[in-house]
Image 1 (cartoon, rainbow, N blue to C red):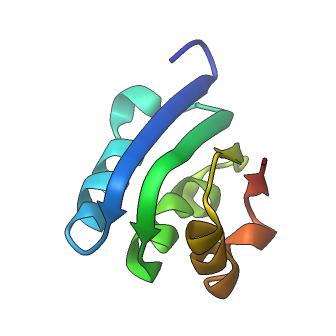
Image 2: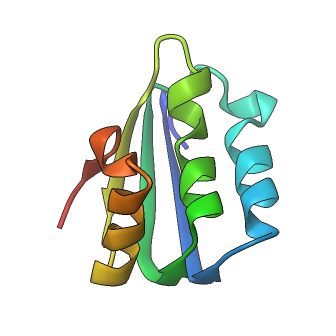
Length: 94
């Protein structure tokens, strides 16, 4: 993390209990004031809806909301982001 920017990389199948861990990580007090998040999802094979919502947490809690950039999301992961409406809030890169 540098001043105002943080990165989070996930891998494997991101489901269930991972949502709580994601929320705890993204809301950690040391990360307050982050204005840009980079989420590397290139190694994620499956992302469930609960975890997709957890990834959007910085957008609904931040004031002003940070920019959230998603990198490397596979087709299956992008589908989940689309179905949850996350793609409207996240900047998804190829």
